[in-house]
Length: 87
Image (cartoon, rainbow, N blue to C red; front, side):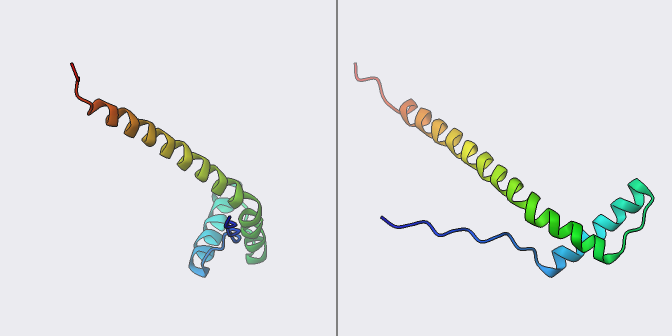
């Protein structure tokens, strides 16, 4: 039996990191009236990337599995709806 490949840690592109870092800076400024420096922005982004991203990723997988199961149930019902009465 073939083993599954282990999924590597989710990595953001440099452009994505820059965009999110700016979002963090703007959030702190808008919501808290605080200006945080680039090191703090990067540290927060790394924390989110390491701790939050896997949780969100797993939730997305669970949601996709539920959706797929629902579609398969629909397919099964649609299949039997095509049957003709044999009497």
